[in-house]
Every structure is written in structure tokens, then in C-alpha cells.
Image (cartoon, rainbow, N blue to C red; front, side):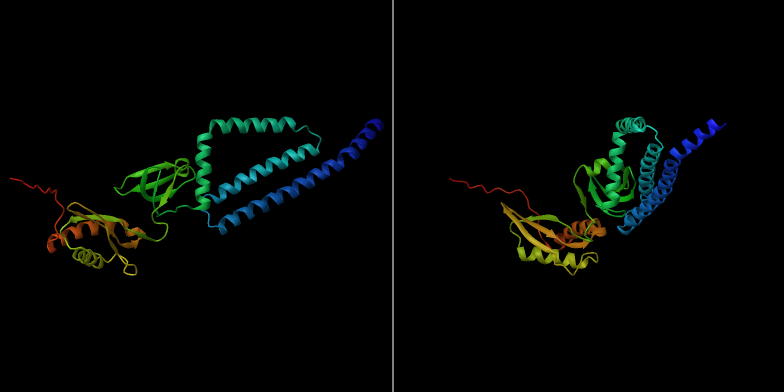
Length: 267
């Protein structure tokens, strides 16, 4: 008994400080990880990151830090951790290769939610589609097109190309072009277009509607017409101007261009 008692005491003296230090490290580490996770979520909220992704990012950071902490504590006990690190690294590599497409969309979704190149309700053009953003998810973005179709686009496809946020500035210029006969008066055409623009309640009166001569061709005058409106009224203004300018051209006798050719006969 004395022999075993001496061995127990010697082992206790040898390992007690390590065990005590490991327990203290574990307790402090868990508290520190909790503080870091809460701080990260607070920072993300201050940056107005989407609320649905904040707990998800916080949990990922928390899990990763806890794995590192457990490996550190195991090493303090004298356990060989090299094999654990290699195993975790190999598993992570395998999962990453198997899910590389999904992880790419996930990373893109996180970037969209953090940097906000667009938000729900914006009219955007991306990945070859134009529509209103209905929902921003971690892996996909849901658009409602102008003809009321639902388009689900992987976030990786959106961030890999240009994104045009039509609603991004709050106000937008509606560019369109009209052609009239070359014999028409430029001042008369400008007057008719401005009357139509002034009659539209959605056209911003704080900004001038540009009516500019684009070019002169044989028998044709091309006008650029550029009214301003709120971003959400883009298509309403576009179609209003198209229809009502045609109506006023007919009412005011403004002729459309027709193919013409001058033929000189010599006897």
C-alpha cells in the first residue's frame, strides 16, 4: 500500500498542475469564445448585416474556436494532438472538395449580406436577369421578374459578374429614343415631349427632362428623351412616355419618318 500510495502521490504532484492549468484554460477559453462571438454579432448588427445570417456566422466562429480550444487543452494533458489536427484537416478538405460549389455560393451570399450591393425590394440586373429582389438567402437570391416570374439565382453566379442596381440611388433617369420625319420642327417636337413629361405625375419636376437631338439622317431626326423618376417608378414612366408621346405626336400632326428617295429624271 505504501508503494502504491507513493506512486499515486508522485503522479498527483506531477499531473495536478497540468490538470489544474487545463481546467483554468478551458473555463477562461469558453468565456473568451463567448465574448468574441457576442462581439462579432454586435459588430455585424452595427453594420446592418441581415439578421438571418448573424447567428449563423456567430455559431460557425464559436464552433471553430471551441475546436481549437479543445485541441489546446488536450495538448496540455500530454495527449498527442498531431493526429487529431491531421484528421480534422483531412475531413475539412474532403468536405470542402465535395461541397466546393455550395461553399462558393455560401461565401458569396455572406459577402452580399455584409456589403449589401443590393437589398430586398431593389430592382437589379444580374446574371442575365432583371427583376425585383424578393429574398436574399445564404446560398441563393430570389428575383421577381417584370412578368411576375420567380427566378432563383445562386449567389456565386451573381457575384461572379457585374451587378446593376437600378434602384440603388433612389432616383433614376429613363432613357428612350424617338424618331420623327426630317421635315418636322425641332422646337415643336421638344414642346410636345415636354408637355407629356409634365403631365406625368411620376416624372420628377425637380430635374429637367432632356429632349436632345441625337443625330440627323436622311429624312429622319432622332431625339433622345430622358426624364427622371423614383427608381420604383421606372417602368411606369417608361411605358407612360412611350404611349402618350405617340398619342400627342398624332394629335399635334408630328409625322413619323418614312423611307424616301429623291429621283431626278433627265430627258
